[in-house]
Image 1 (cartoon, one colour):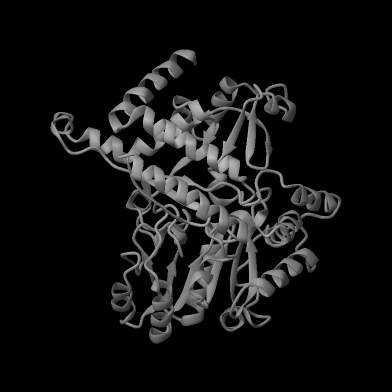
Image 2 (cartoon, rainbow, N blue to C red; image 1 turned 180 degrees about the vertical axis):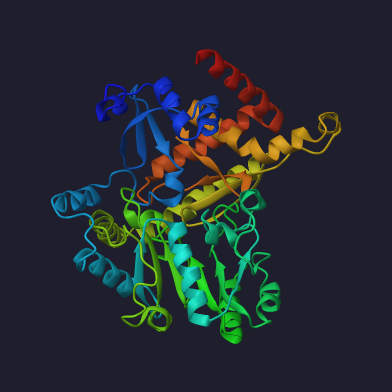
Length: 460
């Protein structure tokens, strides 16, 4: 027992100790984060801010990849968790009043015929449930998804995700999965026309693809084509849902009626992991509508007390504090300020987003003599790490936490909590302006980051 690390020791662990312990989790990740000084120890999180061991405040504009719509440790979510502290947390031999209430609440606020919920632990699990349900409901095997998409890293979710980097090491994945260009209704028409597709799964805005917004009317066209060919429409709202884009669900911008949606991330109020597959009653009953079939898809931790309490509180906060409208208004304000930076700084290729889901894409350096001299290494590094270098600089000199998008590493995501203040938006816009003004190009940023990495190595 003397060799075991106690909770108190873990809470008080130094950066060096934590890096050593990470040898039992993911050593390369620990080395990478440490190299860029991203292994800082944060002790307090409240609202938009976190504080490190030295008491330095940072603005969190990464937002848990869309998990922190309410910010860190929202008091109403904390209160909800406290209220259920003495209750059984996992007890499947009865009905859960909290799961039932959360499902009823979601069915009340969801548009269209979405009515029945399956609760699990993550977005990827919700996607797995959606894919299984679609196959069983339609008696078809094939799925259509889009290039650049991200639906999770479990086998089924990965099979319909868009970036080969994450798929190739695990082939063969699910058979009969076709990826088509995002936003291309004609390609979707052709893909569905064979009549063997169980479902088209799509993000209303591609998050990890680089915050890509489809053409107006694309989701409406997708709905019509799915109806025409008998495929189900699955809308992945894991990152876009719960008010992030200025609507409770992002598909509401086009007023469509999906057959299935997936939720997770901010459904747990930034405190608990919870995922949800929500379907129409017709779809649900076609698969799970009898006593014989009702347990075809389950999970040990489904409907657990803590997660459902957090979900109930999270939805209440979003509606009571009018965070949906806040996301729209603050997003419009922030986008306008960032668009001014796009016009000012040549290194910024494009600013795009909706609500408080925003991406900044950076230009890669031209393929000139230095890139040839390095056998293409310069452009490879810029495409994979330039946005990461920008994140390093924003963290180190401006105390702003950001990160790049997984499927498009040349894009920085800005997804602050919906409770963010206008003065905090101003500060971050000014911080990006100062960093771009200071380095002006890929080369200046590369030299600066290289020096920081070397300095970091010597300090550690």
